[in-house]
Length: 471
RNA sequence: GGCGCCGUACCCAAGUGGUAAGGGAGAGGUCUGCAAAACCUUCAUGCACCGGUUCGAAUCCGGUCGGCGCCUCCA
Image (cartoon, rainbow, N blue to C red; front, side, top):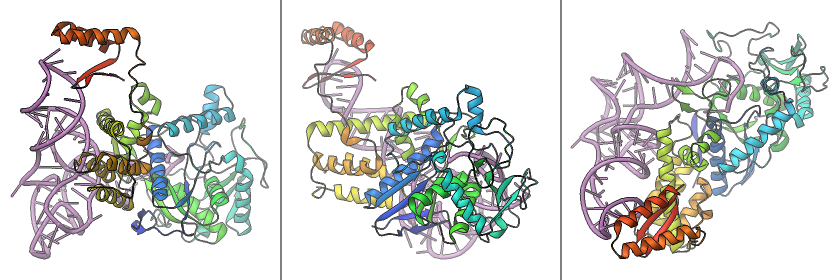
């Protein structure tokens, strides 16, 4: 089955062809670690994860690189505004380095709890300053740069294809938009490769360079680090749609100017998670983190399921009602799997019975068609609800699907231990059994309510009374 | 001002011109002392609205209304 992805470069659905057989080089824009990731950011990393898992599911060997931006970016793309890292530093009294370390750890904790597989390489920007300087030197040697007001700029007029990804004409790029023009720039859309003209007296993150002590512009790290780990040409570059007009446009310009070659074959961008009236952003608006959801009693995987329920290229509206629906669905799914698991072992994936194979094929086809996870999920439900498929085949097919869905179905614990309940509760359950036998239902219901207050749910089944913890 | 995306049941949400996936909620039923759970059944002659193209349109084209994003850091 052929994979098809929507390529932002060209805005069409295209068959996926790799540069090197079954090897895929994939670079995904990662977090700037000056604050926690909000759930909109996390949607993007979930998209990266589904993409990577899908490629692996289809037999590719994926090298997944995600940058950790621990160099502060300015709050705008000019040589002004405040550096975000330093802002947090000033507000918390910690050094920029401490802040970066703290939020990097927090980031990995978040993605771990969402079952997002760790990238193959997670390069830190601060550890690759020399690579960035090297790239800027190449650009300088080829005549793409100029120095002005103490900074090194990239001259977009030297790069004919500038703006191709964003489908914007260089001539009237952003006509009408209010732009504060940096008087040092020859073209308003030129961008900084290296700052030495910082107005921040106490900038703690500075490095020596051929152009003076300073720090890199915010686009150069992705070009330098992606090429270092994936080569000068690679298969996929992904990120949020917000990166199309500026960040990725500039990355392409500087990368292809430096190498003289096409840089990336497939550009994939995820749409935003919408909260209330609009998007979430770290620098403005509401700020919902995974911990906020967890503190409200949601499982991180509820958010993963929620994200799988919408296509990555569609805006997804976040509401607690929707998240509740996802939680209910996810819990129902887990219960089904646990019941199957308690009853049977998974069969061989190559000898599925009934229509299990059809459902699995449908699932694959949905993913192959530009990662249609909502449709893929529907195939999982169709599988589980089909009474003509044996438990063993359901389990085997569901586990297989979960290689992409990443809900941890194979690892689900089947609750069997009835003996880890405190003796007093077990005594109450025994008392209730007797009461029921004596048709003393008043006492039986009292005991059930009593245990419910302690978070123990009793269910009477033909095989006797079962209890579960009410989470 | 420029560019782009989207309007599908009570809610979320797929939909690749050929007759509306899936989930949640709701309703009815089976089972049960009652619950719960489970299972079964049910839930859009219609896809914002108006035209058009077509044998056939949620899907293509035009218009109207409404929502959102980008053009400034942003996933």
